[in-house]
Image 1 (cartoon, helix red, strand yellow):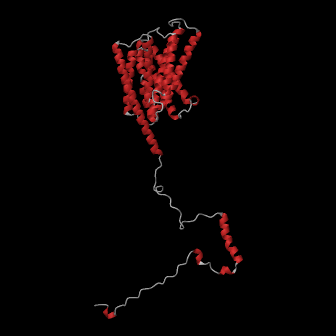
Image 2: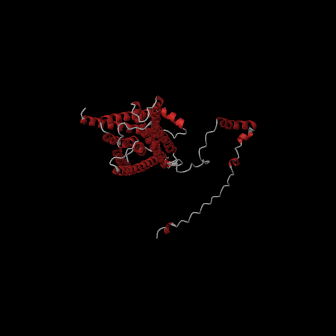
Image 3: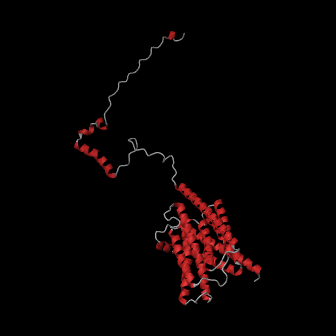
Length: 389
């Protein structure tokens, strides 16, 4: 395959990878929004594994990873890795469309800032040199330190565990997203170590079979943990957690490379400055995405509350008046109706003479005395001859 065809295929595979990751992130965020807050970890995990939408998200993540690996086979990392940053740009309008809303200007600006910072970080970090990998002892030390860091981030101690409301959920979501990206980055570094061990190119002593199996178990644990942590992160929104996941992944790989593999940023001291500036730009983008997502969530909640509130009508604006004596009485029960019909018959049998006597009016209340009506005397009429002047 000629270089031009390989480049085109790498671009297409990179776009497929970005689309797969974007669809998986949107599916996870919608699943997080539809699921209730977990009361315990085991119950939440069982409920998650029972949802078919979760397995669709897992499959989409796997497809995105395979397309990314295939793109790296046909094209250079300097081309493939920046295209992978399009995941955020694709997920933002897709998630807004499925939520029946528009992407806000703040979210678009945050996405552009984050994308610029991510491209700057990827441009100066670069891949490790061929054959460079962590030793077995270094891998175990990195795994232990990463597990402690992930436990701290996931517990919410650094992001305010007791915070409530949309701001608290957003902070906890960013902590989970950071832990997810770190877990994925460490899993990639351990995968490189496992590949070198299987090829018998691992520095130091040759590992035995149980050490290689231990590396495989650690890789599976960190990869699964990163997926579950990203699922928890999307409870605070979609855009900001996804941006943090995409940023913390290469950042963790860069820290491992600089600290343990003797690597440095490209362009020497300028590379450090570019990396610092790119980090600030990306942080600015994450802040904008957090603000845009929180404001949009508040608008949706207010709209939902106003739509669900009962509308007062003229008939319900006034309290119901009590029934008066002029109102139609409620229908009597059959027993009461029969009693009222047989009472006069019993009275006739007891006192036949009283039947001819009308009931006293006092039974219906006091009888008012008749008033004397005084008619005014007619005015004297004028004589006929005096009627006209």
